Image 1: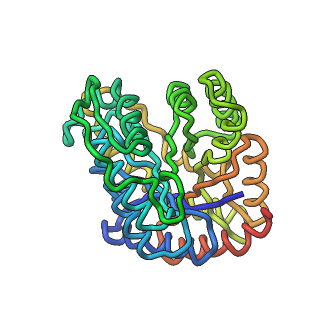
Image 2: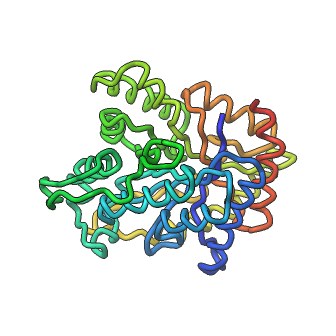
Length: 344
């Protein structure tokens, strides 16, 4: 079982942007010190829910600050940029880091980002498969041209080639964030592992994994290939470790609702469509029930139960739910020293 951190660079009430970003960097450094498997970085625009606007840029910094741990994006929002530009950046980090970079991509949401960056609603609603396929061809081929509805250009050379690591490793691992049956089917058809969100529980994730396997086999992928890719699915969650489960829950209930309210309320849709917002306190309670929030033994049992139920053996756990740098570092330390040994 591989356990990593999920870093949002969340801006809690009363905090500035620099404090949130400092905590994000320290979380990643602490994760390597604690022996965790990976750091997964989110990106958001124009909202305090997360103040990192470029997960791949922060990944570059953290790959330079660390030596062993994997660093991945969770996710780079594909409709906000050009897939070739993202492919070039991913190849650069993959090669320069010696293969420690993972590219997670997703469709994002119908946010004002689409207006600001010029993608428009089409980039979100209908052009995402074309963008994803162009990105995957950029990772696979030596030369690429495009003649689609959205992207058209003459053939150009792929430089740097992502498969030219000195040790002969392949292109960077790529995952797709999946929140609906349509995205699960897209990941399955392309043979990509899934990144599943922290807002749903084990039963829903198990259904998504089962659908992915059925669709991957139907798309012509061999059973061995399906099994190999399935081993790379990632489940996102929340982790808070304490001597008593009630204390861990209390820590998050004191801090996360305020962050969720100001962060989620700040999202603006590109076309004025209605958004149904979660109740921040009820959502925090739900996250505490679904994920490893409690004693080390409880957290280990919770992770093991999720793995058994879903078949997923990789985790990206949000550990900054207290909003405090020192508390977050201690949470990461305990996750590595007290929870990980119970999983082996």
